[in-house]
Length: 458
Image: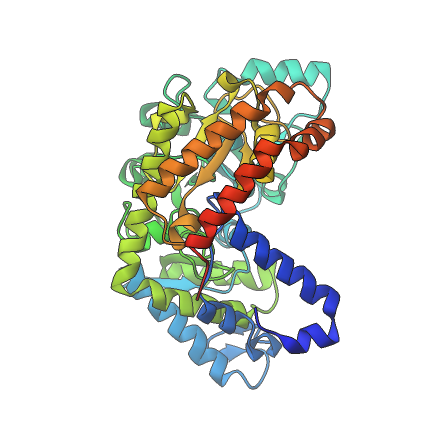
C-alpha cells in the first residue's frame, strides 16, 4: 500500500493496514477461502465508484447518473458469461454483496416461505447459509445430538443460527460414515423421503469433486431445483481444473474472493427466467444498492481469469494441494478422504494428541495460518473441533510449487510435535507457553525467509 495521504490524516488506521500488509507478506496463508488480489483489482475496489448509488438493474435504476455504472455492470456480466461458458438462455447477477446474500436471494426469489431445502450438514462441509441450526447445550439435548451422529440425516435443532433455517424447513444430509464421501444412493433415498423443493451442494470443507449430473438427477426425480454453491471452487471451475455445474444445475452461486481471486462479492448464474426472480430476491429482498466498486473489482478479476495463465494457476492450485496432502499423510497426518480433488485439505488431528483449536493457534504463532474445523461425524463442537482445514490458493498466488508444499508439510509436522507436550493446558496458558518457545520462534523466522523468496506483488 502506498498512501501518504492516509498516513497524514489517520496514522492509526494507516499503521494498522501496514501491519496487516506485513503479516500477509511474512506468514504463509493456508486458509482455503483466502487469496491475494492483484493491484489492479485493489485499485478498482478503492476507486470513486464507491461513491455512487445504483439501486435497480441495468437500464432501470432508481437514481440518475448511472450510465457509466450500467456499462460497468454489463461488462462484468459479459465477462462472467464468457468465463463460465454460459448457455445462451442463462443470465448473471453480480449485485449480491456476499455468498450468503446470494444464497438467501436465491431462496427468497425462487421458493415460498417454509419450503423444504435439502443441504449438506455443517460438520461434513456444508455452509451456515445452507440452513444451519443446532441443539442448545444441555445434557438431554447433547444426548439427543449424539444419538443422531450415526444417521445420514440431520433434521436441525432448536437454535436457528442462520436466517435460512428460520425461514425454511431444512433437511441436511451427511457423508458416508465410513468413507466421508457423498453417498449418492443414500442421498436419493433421503430426497424421496423428504421431497425437498431445493437441493443444494457445496460447502466449505468437502475436499472431493461433486458429481453434479447425479445431484441434478436426484433433484429431478423428486421435482426439486438443484443449486450448486461453488464459492470455494469458482476459480477452479473457471480455469477448467474441476468439473463445472453450469448448464447442469438450475442455479450456480459463488463468491469471488477465493480461488477466483476477483475481490469481495458474489456471482449468481441461472436461466434468464430464474435470474429475473433472483434479481428481485437481491433487491428489494435482502439488500439495497450494490457496491459498484466491488463489482469493478470482480470485473477486473474476471478479465484476469480470462487470460491463458489463469488456467495454469488453477491447475497448479490442485497440484500443490495434492502434493501437500500426500506429504502430510507420509508424516502420519490423518487426511480426511485420503486426499483432495481441489484446493482444500481437511486433517483429523485426533491421532496427533492436539486438536484443531490449539493446533491452529500454534501453527499461526509459528507463521502458518490455517483454521480449526469440524469434520464428518465430529463429536466436538465447531468452537473446539477435532480437525484443521488448509488449502493452497494463496501460496500458489505467491508462486510456490511442489517443492515448497513439501517444506510446508515438514514445518507443520515439526510444529505439532514441538507443542504436543502442552496440549492439556487451558487454551490461554497453551498460547502463552507456545509463544515463548525458541523452536517456534526459529520456525517463524525460517518461514519469514521462505515468504521473502516468494513476495506478494502486483
